[in-house]
Image 1: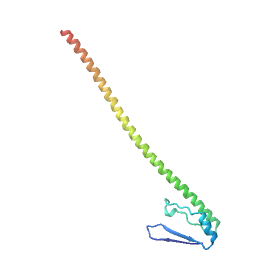
Image 2: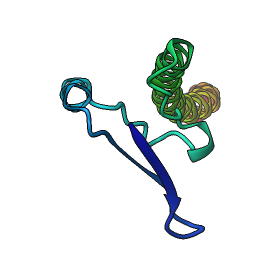
Image 3: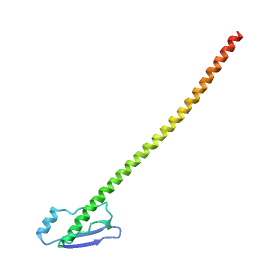
Image 4: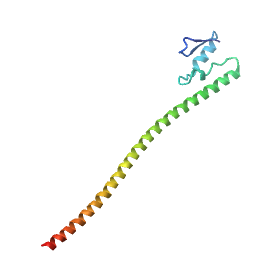
Length: 133
């Protein structure tokens, strides 16, 4: 197998090209597509193994497994951060409603006291009017 790696430009990721003149290798590559990790930083991307070294293949497979786990954790973190934002928005809304409720309770208490006071004054004035008649 022949492998070549080139960087087209500094801002582009490295491109790796592999090919083999052995037909069985081509069939194996066609059956086993190389995993892709587009969300993973370039420096963390799994490097293709040396096919002749069993340890290299094992390290590569382990690296791919870890990259998949990392990708899943990254997506789970993003999902949980979205949920956190939703819950924070709900909490702020609940706090606003709670403050409004407390304000309305206080306003009700004040109006009830004022009403009680007006009822007392009305009763007193009614008694005074009766006495004057």
